[in-house]
Image (cartoon, rainbow, N blue to C red; front, top):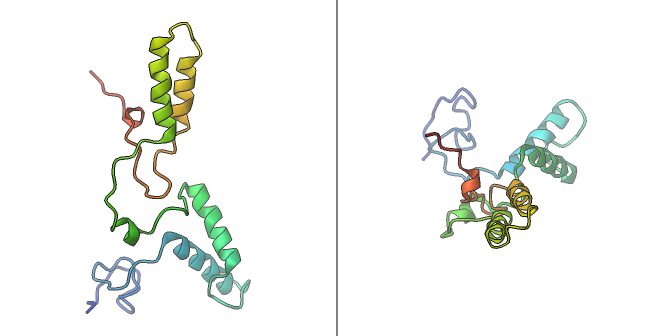
Length: 146
């Protein structure tokens, strides 16, 4: 049973739909669904849409918003992620940068290789596309001060 709570948002009127309620029994909707619903609700409120339910164009707009925010809509839902035993992640860009870095030692005459290492690290997405696990490469660690 869901208990009434006061979050300043839903005022306990419908606590099972309030995302701030720690006792809610229904799963939180995916972020894409939340953004699409918010856009649809706004369109309805200002008279741009007769139906407050999100349509395909609202999901397209939500995808655009999430892309700007850096959120990838390909990410698996949290309830699926909870079922997985996930290993650490090293991006393809950082893995390739490590291999090129080793090549700089074996081929010191190739002055262009360090620039390739830096460029590859710069292309790392920082998180795995489907799971959101952060890349474990040391290039993402803040520099240590002595």
